[in-house]
Amino acid sequence: QVQLVESGGGLVQAGGSLRLSCVVSGRTFSSYHMGWFRQAPGKEREFVGAISWSGTSTDYADSVKGRFTISRDNAKNTVYLRMNSLKPEDTAVYYCAAKRGGWDTARREEMYDYWGRGTQVTVSS
Image (cartoon, rainbow, N blue to C red):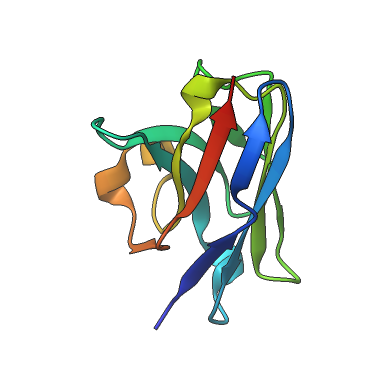
């Protein structure tokens, strides 16, 4: 069974930074593409970014491109989401997720096999 646990969320002022972590249990972490999604109150969950199993490919939503960076450490079974220049509209619950299969579907949440429970990020103005 694969389990994902996010951490690192919190309250930050606009313009500040946070780094989220997602630790994945199991021996096959390096075979999964990893994604970050978020859900703001009253809104649908949306794609934030993803990183391929090897770490050589990344993809970001336009709303976070240039501000957020995804990385992974396969030796630690951990994926990170570094968030800089945070804005109030970044306030949401952030989820990490793991998927097998093609990289071309990394933006599609229905293609992910495993999900964490989420961590709250609140950005004050």
